[in-house]
Image (cartoon, rainbow, N blue to C red; front, side, top):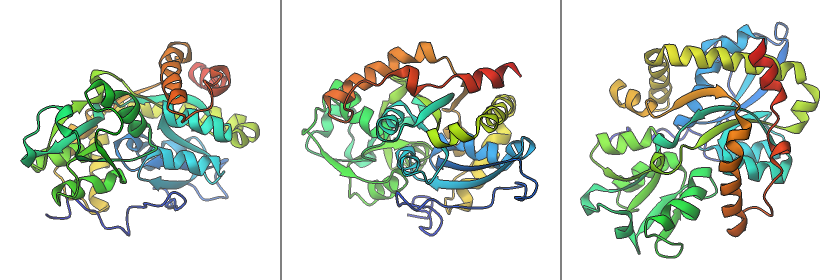
Length: 331
């Protein structure tokens, strides 16, 4: 296998506390910046709208100096925020609720829907066609991530794979395709662009698309410390997101090209067409329809309480702080 499957470990961070801090493209110096921000995001496809907004210069235009913290999945960003190492970051509902319970983290906007980017993929040579055929086999999962929790608690049982019927192998998502190619695991709970790589390279076939049962909203979350001290910055930040969201919808090819360059810089050799396919599953929708999202979040919270991943269903009036987005959207 070529390095399409396994990027240089010097370039992808895998530790929970080892965020990669780097100078953002075109960001202002400390003397010029009105606001400072420690921005976390995952290096799978979910984090690419955040990456694009940072590197495009939109945050610079709105007065921000940014330190980037890149990690394999959003639950690691959440842990960094609980430890107050990062101010803001993106992740799905399960991680947001865990972060709220552990560290008072709150959602300040909906950024995207990503259900189409998440899959259960089996090794192609096994010729498996249905999830329940994976009983007794090794399934790689980013344990503790939102996708990992949704798979274990909801998707797998609904598809004939209750807990204990398969071997869950803890693994960072950016290592999964290489592990499947090496036949050390039989299937992976994958996120784009790794799903597209596995398919394009003929390594795996998709058994389950999460969009069939979960649209998977992804939120931008902030620490209560940052909120308490930076109300003006939060409104400016969300104005930048509104602008960036419009640009991403209007110029999807430009975004896909920027993201393709990001992954090739990390050691992946994938075609532009493969990246465009992967990005096609990200539905950028910068908004905050909190009332409509509460039933979805409540359902997942109840599942997580049963699974003992949450102590209680949270008060969503405290989890969602809509006032900053409301001000930004009206400006």
